[in-house]
Image (cartoon, rainbow, N blue to C red):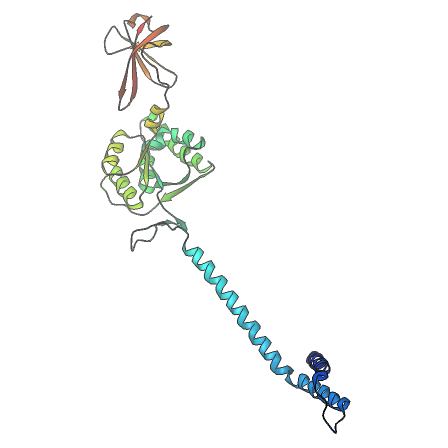
Length: 300
């Protein structure tokens, strides 16, 4: 109340001051005292200023609220427009993005049993060539378990090593491993992988040559570790010479076979008698086969 009273007085003083200033413009009237008229006008203006304060205050409040609401509405409108312009993932109509727990899945990598057992996928991931979400379907883990329970000692060790690879992948920075528990249609594990990759628009990570071909025919992306390994092998041109240890006979009894450090097989003519020895070989021909690259050469 004191604040309102002070504000009323301030407005009254402003009105009274204006009256004093402009009363000088009032022409003198006969039979009247000019000074008295000025005093009356000033007092009247003072009273008007004191009385009209509530109306002025309401007008100021209304103008302020209107301006504030306009600014807030305009800012929110512009922010909404900018948000709507942001790109969004395009999903088929009526099909929400699938999830594993609370993780939304879009175009994941799906791990095959062959890639897990092979183990090189772990080195590729550690090198940073694979990142993001990797799905391990439950039926793949079941197949891996069957390998780990095999009576064959070699298969059993490779199966157990496969589980170690999955655990080590979980520790690689930039990779998130999730198990896909949902049922999947298909008679075989390969059929289920193909159908799962189609449903999730994902890619299959494998070393299986036949699965690679079937997936390619079905227009499904495949990351084949063998193809990556072959692409990274050193290219030897005809006429180049290399040091090579002959380790066993070739298909022809006169041939000797050795291997480069990256695993590329080299067939050397007339080298059957040099098994166990390191010789100098000249490259004569390079043959690209689905399983990789073969080099043919002759003794220097």
